[in-house]
Length: 336
Image (spheres, rainbow, N blue to C red):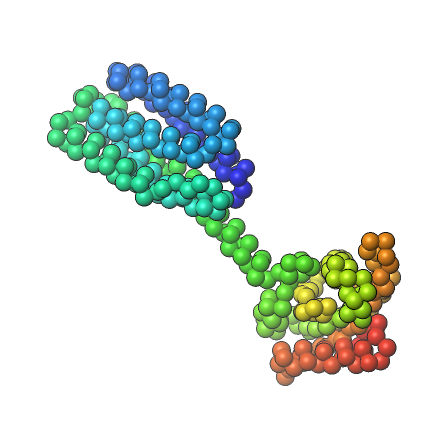
C-alpha cells in the first residue's frame, strides 16, 4: 500500500460517513429526536473538516478527530435513543479498525495511532451508555416504527466498515508477502530469479516437463571487464545481458546462478540447442557500450538433457562439465 492509496481509502470512508450522518439527521427529524437532529449538524461539520485534513495529508489528526467524534456520537445516540437502536454496535467495528489503521501506519512509516488507548475509550463509552439506558431508560421513548429501521442502518454500517477495512488489510498483507517472496527469489541487479529459487524449480521439473534441458551460461573473460572498465561496467554488462536473455528465451526459466554465471532450464530439449545458439549469437552481435567505451561480450554455454536416472546435482554437474569443456576449447560456443 502507498500513501496515495491510504489517502484514497480514507477519502472514501469519510465520504461514506458524511452521507450516512446526513441520512441519520433526516431520520432523527422524522423520529422527532431533536437532540440527535441538532447534534448531527456539528457532526456533519466534523466530516467536512475531515476532507480538509485528508487533502492536507494530516491523516493522524484526522483519525484522532473522527474516532473521538464517533465515540461521542455513539454514546449520546445510545443514551438518547436506547440500546435497541443499535448505535452501541459501532464499538464492534471501531476496535478492530483501530488496529488495522495501526498496521497501515506502521507499514507506511507514519505516526502510529495508539489502538490500545482508543479501544479503552470505546469500551468505556459502550459501558457508560448502555448501562445508563438499562438503569434510567432512554431519553426518547423507543418507537417500534423506527427501531427496526435504525437497527438495520446501524448494523449494516458496522458490517460495511468491518468488511471494507478487513479487505484492505488482507490485500496489504498479501502484497507484503508477495514482495517478500520477490526479494527472496529474485536477484536485485539483473531482475532474474536467484539460485535458491532455481533449485526449487529444478526439483519440480519432472512433474511439469516431459523432456527437460538445463544450460549453464558463463560470460567469457568477465574478470577482465571488471579489471579494465570497472565494476560499474561489469554490472552494466550483467544487466544488459540479462535483458537479452529475457527477450530471446521467453518461455524458459532463467536465473543468475552466481557471479557471471547464469542457468537456464526449460522443456523440449530437441529445440534447446538451436535456441541457445541463437542466444549466443545475439549476445555476441549486441553492442555493449558503457561510458563511450565498447565492451566485447561473448558467452560460453554448457547444456545437458536430463535422463530418468539423473539426480539434480548430477544434471547440473553434467552441464557444468560441458561449460568448462567449451571454455577450454576456445570459448564463445554452445556444447551439449
